[in-house]
Image (cartoon, rainbow over all chains, first blue to last red; front, side, top):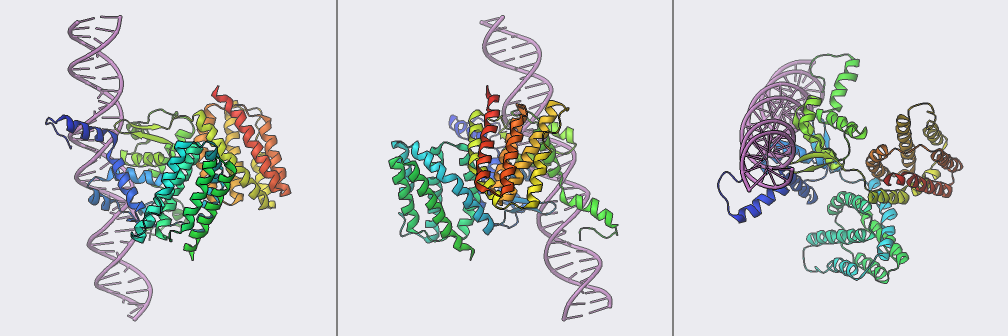
Length: 233
Length: 233
DNA sequence: CAATCCCATATCCTATAGGATTTTATATTG
DNA sequence: CAATATAAAATCCTATAGGATATGGGATTG
């Protein structure tokens, strides 16, 4: 297909061959669709015709169906018999509340565990993740918020990583995928408060204070919820 | 609209038309594979050749790939490029610990909420779910444990339902899917303790005591963990 | 003018076929 | 006897084609 029967240089082998090994077409298609969902190029609730993807990505239906099935298993798309695939509907108010309830049960505890397991290297990594945020003053509002959202996700994910429970980390990341789409739809202003709250978390981590980390995380999540809940009006 | 131009009795509509609407081939294939994974007919870690399923289920590759993709998205199977699909590997000791940590963060709190929202109807439903267990004295050990596992899952799921947070409920159910396979592999004895612990939970629910329900659930999960952790020796 | 029926198009669903790669078995050789 | 190389089988991966169904527009009729 890509490489026929001709000889190829060692460089070709080092690139195409390895790339070919590590990624099937179905995986590439998955990444493409996933990216379109995350960037809102495919809006929540809108239909996803298979044939469109066939023409757009220049691949046959089979890998596309395989990728869509995987996305269905992850809950990002839904399939209706004899109707087809469509992007998962936008998050509801009820679901929003449930998500924050879940976060409040998991993240403060994990923050406390992370504080206990804190060391210089990890602290530096957290400082970096928190420090990059909010430095883009002159740029476009939308891009700026998109950047903040990504950095905020990295910051929280790092804390989960240091807490040590991979299962909880995966669970939150999975939910975050859905949440990200919601957050981008109603991108609220990047308040300075969020950055202050991150600072409070960093202080608790620097002190290795589990109780303070628990409290700081709890308040951060509650404030985040109160800031975003306005989108439902 | 769904029924074309011919008249059909109401019974026909209730059976063929509706059934046909609600199940695509891919969905049926999914159910079949899911069942084989749950019943350990496909062992954890073993390969799942697509062609085998083609012959076994008498359907073509496409719906099978779609179903396998969905199972991959749910984490029950893994796919390796140019190798194929295989069942997800058995749960590790580390994962086991993480799962119980997650349960301890979520289920006691939900039990407390369920206790607050308790009423006669719900209490009766819980009593029934708990009461059916352990009554199979003469039957085969393996079948008896399988029955207990299913009933135990229903009992816990009902509590989550009454707690009101669908997201938490779905999260735990999703994890339970993986856990079920582990539990069936090393099916330990059905101790009478588990039933006693369920009784303690019911008592707390009957009293509407949130604090007692939290405590009873926490102890129940911790004991469950201690009973099952022996399987790793 | 509104409602209904019908037809054409678009889309989905399934099946089959061929090319590419990995794995396994066998034979050969040091 | 062990190790390697070759060949064959199994499996995966992709593409194409045909049948079935839903959706939308237009014509007809009350």
